[in-house]
Length: 182
View: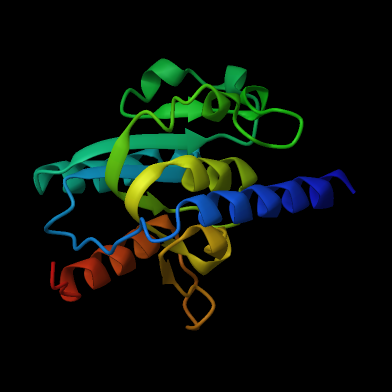
């Protein structure tokens, strides 16, 4: 019941934000993207994979900000072991699943060329961050909350199971291939 209410409230906020931002989004190619905001669900066992993704973006001259949502108790891990990430957990959320720092405009203060959500399932906190982040183009997989994204990788189309790395590779592949006229 509460989960349904949380998703209802998200969809309501989504329609308000989309109505206020009508016409602001634009497609950004990989070459033109300078500041990239990376979102994903944190798994300590996959940290090496996440750092490879972050490092590959930085090698290409991109400024990367990486935030991760940890669905478990953050006290069970040593956050200092993961210096490239801002990690938050359920204690950083309000009653409805919205991150508290979103309300304090921490997310809205920065502007990004590209937001990439690598989540493998719809995670409401990441969907809220994606909704309120100022990014020219927002990309992610169809399972991570398609209503937030401008560019979607359909993860249900093929027979292969997608993980964070393959979602990232698909998004970057298409961003490199598509050309814009601006």
